[in-house]
Amino acid sequence: MLKRVAIGLTVFAVLLTAAPAPAHHAFSSEFDVEKPLQLQGVVTVMEWVNPHSWIHIDVKGSASTVNWMVEGGSPNQLLRLGFTKNALLPGMEIVVTGYQAKDGTNKAVGRELTFADGRRLFLSESAAGTPK
Amino acid sequence: MVGRCLVSMGLAAAVGAAPPPTLPRTPDGHPDLQGFWTNATITPLERPRELGAKEFYTQEEAAEYRKRALVPLSTAERGGTEAHYEFTQFGLDRSQAQIAFSLRTSMIVGPDGRVPPLTPEAQQRNAERAARNKGHEFDGPENRTIQERCIVWGNEGPPMLPPGYNSFLQIVQTPAYVAILQEMIHDVRTIPLDGRPHAPQSVRRWLGDSRGRWDGDTLVVDTTNFTDQTNFRGSREHLHVVERFTRVDEDTIRYEFTVDDPTTWTRPWSAELPLVKDKGPIYEYACHEANYGFANNLRGARAKEKADEDAAKKEKKDPK
Image 1 (cartoon, each protein chain N blue to C red):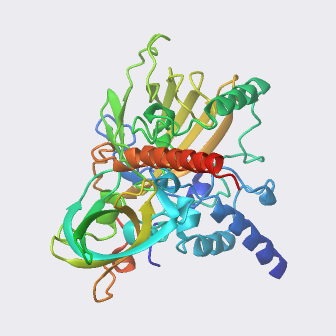
Image 2 (image 1 turned 180 degrees about the vertical axis):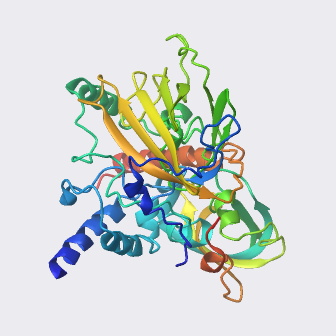
């Protein structure tokens, strides 16, 4: 039995790494893993657009305020995750951890996203799934 | 469990069995295939070699596999890169989604459970194409995949395989037509049932030319006339697909397909997966409405070229 389970686990590990890449486009050529960043700013626009949503935030620097665009999941996925149109409104302050675009412009992919007080923004597991 | 997943464990056992008499039917007497369905899965297309000819898990093995599969994957495992958004936050990780389960160890049926070998002709064709494209992947928009260009998504097929996310489809049925809308990427395949022949060979379509008929309680759909830019695992304009839709219970359609293309594979091959009922709705996926990522990819490539060029100039001017 133990042996059988051990074999099974090896197989499962193989299976799991064979999961299809779900991104719509090549994130590795869009964003630079060598350019990690953290941004804290105020939401100006939440674009509910396909194939991926984009969050615009104003980030205050010492000299000026810079507008950044942050890429997220498809609106369809976010809705099924429990998002509503009111989840992210202009004026809300958020912190984004991610990676900058390879072209050096003020665009990033958001790995993690929280409110300024540390609360996780996206509802994640509590609202997940789409049971019939 | 987080995913609140539906279990269609009975599917494998139902293979070959007559549909129950209470099967939902349309007024013309055919099984009713209509509604919202998902084909999201944890079953791979090809069977891992370690499993040999083992076509089905036991209930116990399947439960263990599900437990391990429905743990959130790291971003790199799912997105192919670390520079991707976190799926449990910005996307819908499969541990959070509804899954259509089966006891199968692979979607491909039979003792091999693998796509058959490519013909020598196909191997040569693929090698030539790869050599031609190498280093030019980001030259311009048309060098990108038809999927990334929002022309057609791989799952739309036919054959219809799970797209990886937004794995939903809707079927609408009349005595004369069946229409299949897939959320990714919002195309509708309209399938006439009136026995008309396929379109002339000169007419080529991204989703092929489908014709349907009822074989007892199973809808059989035959599709040909794909384009030379269609790419189903290397099969293009000569791809021939036969799909079979059988409603096996209130919550499940058994979806089977056989593909053949003598210019690509050494033999035809077949697969099977369940479509499981979903509450809907299907959301519009207007793929190009703001495809910033597409332009960003090309800009990233130009930025890299410039950086390489500058580095080469510097090296020439100031050799180490």
